[in-house]
Image 1 (cartoon, rainbow, N blue to C red):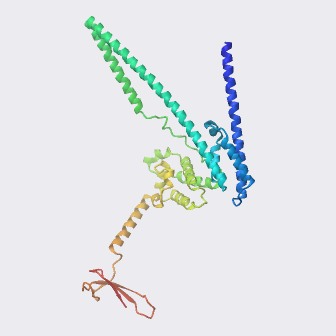
Image 2 (image 1 turned 180 degrees about the horizontal axis):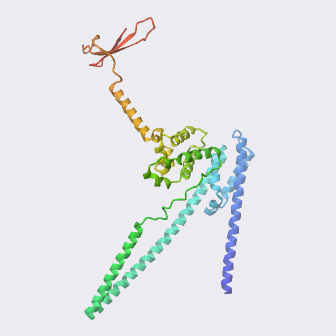
Image 3 (image 1 turned 135 degrees about the vertical axis):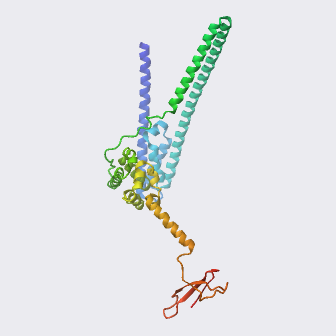
Length: 380
């Protein structure tokens, strides 16, 4: 008992020493990065006009110390220093920028190497386990063959009743094996209900403590809450199962992540989406957004024509068809006459129109087109 206690105590002491070594390394790494960050901020305030400055020198010294600092995957993940170091790769000072980029690449290679090592070790463990399973299966098969041979010998030496019993036992084993296989296939084909459970519906809107963003979320939620009163009875149950507050938050978050604030350069895109979702004449688009037929990321890529209602889209198609028909027909009919004779085909079926192309005291210019050969000429 004393030897067991002493072994446990030694293991605990080793663990405490490892923890004490790990945490000071993390704090030292954070302090070095903070020193480099402060010096970089001071160098950026000074500006990039000067060749060098004491702030830039201090930042470079701190980055060189970080470069020599022994780090591993666990320390980089726990401190999250690598993510913050990426900001220095866009620094106005070129020396700081290049050294920070070099340090980021070094740390990235460390993370990649350690992850590859862990994957290789895991694959080796899986291979060993597969080999052991294969050996166990082969040994079981050999045992079964030996037993079957023994049973056959016993059957030949024994009576017919023993052979019947062996056959019955084999048939029962086969039936049990087929039943187990059918059960496994049926269980695999059943859907996983735990994965299909939807999150609970929100009873109120989730705010982000930003007045402009919260206002957009309120307008979207108000518009989406109108959908249950606009749909027919066939879609009522499906609409009642949706969460308008959650959909409004997801749509606003997608717009903010891609376009930034609504009062910036992309405010017209914000207005287009908000107008089409709130439009009382466009219930189809609201319903599609709430039911998830149009995902938030897809909404940002839609054109105003695609967000329009079905009636409006049909009207646009008719307008385009009419414009195309008028273009192919050559526009509205013009006045025809036989007073002019075409010099090319000698026909007298022509159309004409007049324009005042010169000063007011001059006569109008007449433009003539032959209907037969499409010859054009003019005269005053």
